[in-house]
Amino acid sequence: LLQEARRTLTAVYAMDVATGATRELTAGYTALVGDVSLNASRTMLGFTAQSSDVPPEAWIAPVSRFAPVRVSAANAAPRPPIGRTVVTSWKSTDGRDVEGLLTYPVGYVEGTRVPLLTLIHGGPAGVHAQSYLGVSSASYPAAAFSSQGYAVFRPNPRGSGGYGTEFRRANLKDWGGGDYRDIQSGIDALIARGIADSTRLGVMGWSYGGFMTSWTVTQTRRFKAASIGAPVTHPASFDGTSDIPDFIPDYFGGRAWEVPDEYRKHSPLLHATGVTTPSLIQHGEADVRVPISQGYEFFNALQRQGVPSRMQVFPRQGHGLTEPRMLRARMQANLEWFLKYIPTGKTVSAR
Image 1 (cartoon, rainbow, N blue to C red):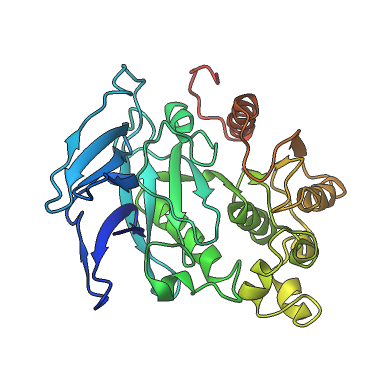
Image 2: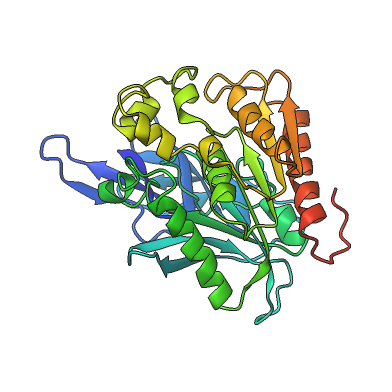
């Protein structure tokens, strides 16, 4: 048995170890399955299941026939309203089919244009899935954004997992190329559909999402605010300081001294001239995956050009924040940053 991302959901497959033939046990199941395990007799599956508006609970199902039964009610307490989330798809600039998730503001009125915040996932082989919105996505408080009147767009551009081998490899030697155009064309599609207000756009992301956000503000001035989390901003110096020294060379086709043009071409720092987007940069002080120097390099480039910017450092934290107080501080800062530069007119408390 194996579990694998399938577009914006997950699937559980049975593979015949002798022939390699596979069948999907969860075919037709529309909840997001996770944490799958077998009982001792290997007859029952235990797992969690959730959806965009339903928090996770524990479920079981026979291996022989996937007929899930819920066995917990840990999250049955009343919850604040959450904006409706739908799978949305569009054509990229080269005709490639791309999809992602769109969460409407709470109480959205059809035909109304609203401010749009785009959340870019990490990886780059991560994927935005239909998980419960009340569980923050990389600690960007999507449910709070929705309650404040923002639509939240979570695209799965080329390079994302869950869409097959060719799609996942489609950003090799092309960071900030086709993946960037996939994201921007998705925003264009939401504007064309009368949902997004083109004058009130924000963008954010952590790790590879931080790279893409820092890259984005070097390429366009369409965004009124950005939040850049634990970003790779200078691939050459990242390659020499990260705890995963083969990561960038695998994507770029060599080391910085072997293919310097590739590193230069994909460096947000080396394209930072003329950036104007107000940018919040967040980084864990103890990050060894993407060292904090990456955040400081880009922050200083913005500061020296007079760009409204803030560097928020989280003490003791690595690439992923773990302390609840720090997680809250990160979410709170993001909410306040976007409310400052892209006001929605809502009077809901930011807390």
